[in-house]
Image (tube, rainbow, N blue to C red; front, top):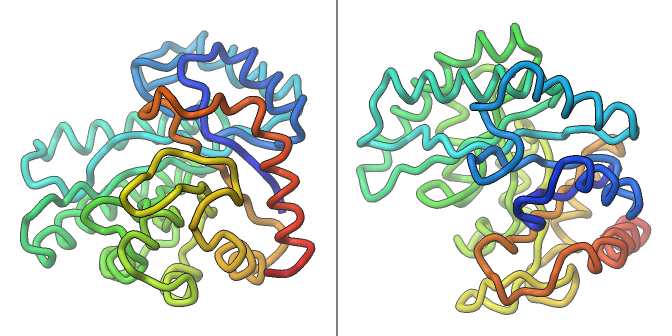
Length: 266
């Protein structure tokens, strides 16, 4: 099992410092938040992309994923613009050598069947480019489709191996879904597992792994049962919670906590 962290936890940190942090704390990969606030996003040029890829390669750290903000089920999204945004994320991931891109559902309050159909149509349309680019599109369990049961409705309609799921353990838990149920739905389609911890459903301020209420042990155990070559990625949402503790000092204890969960097998 390999470990990564999201740059959402270290907002705006320059790429050389991100890579050095991963190397120093024993993380094999990084999930790059692809937003104009960050050093890496679809607007950067060829030379910048090459420099980022070279920095990671030089240090022996992988770019696990490019975490974008495309909302594939959004009712108000322009079809052509949505397709362009998806394509740009795929191209960015290809140029960086990342294995995955992350997209959100973003279906809002519209009829679930309509949201499913819209998301599936957009994802299916982008799948050939993703296959050609050797990049996998992952629909995160989030917002309108926060449970495994929600996500699988879309993925079942898409039916393409290049489109899968990203299991965010907080959102399936907030959706009232048991880990064993989430895993059963998502396992055939899973790209990687996104871990985090929080105090309660009412207080989602990020905490050190193991310090909150999320069923991390069960989720990690189920995911590890699928094979030992997967990725656990810590998404620490410092960007949205300014008063949360700084992530760098938590990274080593967090990795050790995950290693202990894996060693115990639960």
